[in-house]
Length: 132
Image (tube, rainbow, N blue to C red):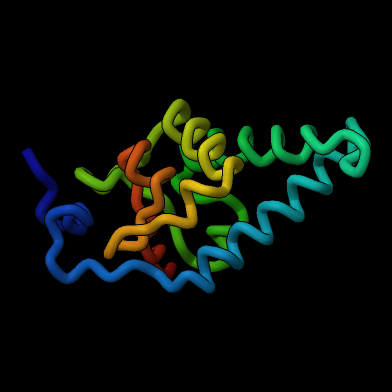
């Protein structure tokens, strides 16, 4: 049974409009700075370049899997949902999405819904977050 008050899944919503690339990039910058700060606790991000990348991947996995938003996404009012049902993508797909995003190239090739390869491979989409 479907919830009549739930928003339509992005894949089936003909009025779906993705958020701007500026908001997505802003969220990524915020998350990257947070990753650098956290990585600085246990490693030197300058000499241990893997540490902030690992933190970013873990941040994406945990925050997207549990809350559908990273801290940067929360600030820029966007969230990451399942393309087909509009639900959360879960921990494993959040980790995979973070790993693919860390590779950079998949994010640069987008479709008409601004879904990069990292989004398409994890069946995810970035949408506007509702105002509270």
